[in-house]
Length: 337
Image (tube, rainbow, N blue to C red):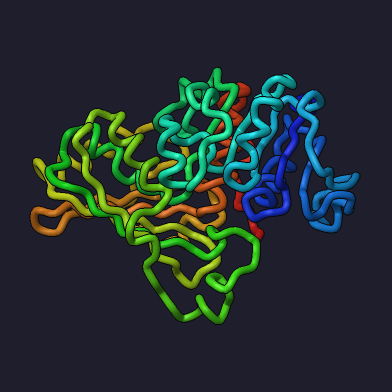
């Protein structure tokens, strides 16, 4: 099949960007036309992607007039200032950062310590979680791919919230692999600091919390209260979210609600045993288990933070927006990192 969708990736040298490039390279309807990197501008693409047969050099900026879609893997608040120009250039934009996830512009100074540079675009952005927003994604010009913790937490809880079976405040205990912190070196993700250790962070509130609250409250539970505590685990990739709440009704009713909610969904599966992160590693699957301990529901969700939690979900949204089969380029495992 002729490749006819011209794709540009801004910030192609981070973990999410590199994963995205590997996925797009296997997509039968995509031609990778431009890859940008502020630190690698002018260097050959082959120096970073030696197995992909990509020709040319990294650019300092992408030219949206020569692309049908721009995937933005730039740091928070960097891509937001460029998105309007990309849209005006005629490209659709799929943003991997947090720049367009929150609908309320006043929340960005609270969670990201800066004003939003393009608040007028927030209303145009579609939250890129296909299990909830597939219809809106079909016509989306600007897609905000949710965070990895957010994806796992929302998918773990959406059926319970929608069915009205949540009887108390929700507690989410979530753990992430180190690649979720990005590719830039830092003491907090140094091997000697992370190996053989496990610790909680962002106790006062993590940036992904408002995304989870926004989406769950939109499902009809405006009084929802939620405590979210993330942990850094000594593994390269993976997210495990364990969610606790008092259960209205029986665990059989809860399991039925999840089976119905995710029936026909290609990438979220309800599984009979609590999943380990390795089951979802390198794939675009989110694996959800529904259980209970006495009157307390215990729902676990596992996914790969770089695939379903980032690049894979971006490609899934792209497929929906451009009319391709939702699973195109996502059928087999992505290996690096």
